[in-house]
Length: 68
Image 1 (tube, rainbow, N blue to C red):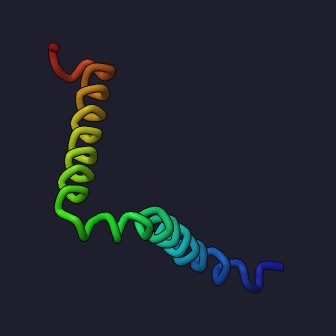
Image 2 (tube, rainbow, N blue to C red):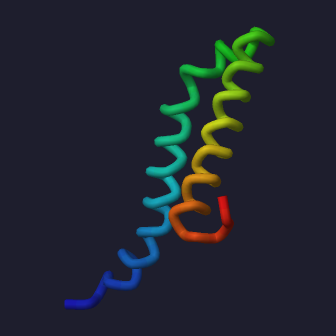
Image 3 (cartoon, rainbow, N blue to C red):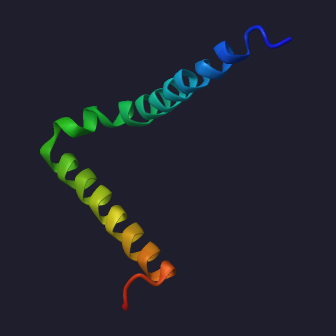
């Protein structure tokens, strides 16, 4: 009944890594041609940094980590 149990358990991390890597590749592959032009590269980097700052400020305000 439990012959291949541990073999299956040890396959799950590899499966998770494969799924996450595939998700990242399919998400960022269409953006690669845009990164070749400096204007769109700066715009995408600005969008990424501003969304990260927005997320950080929102979470800090929601969790009460800083007095805003």
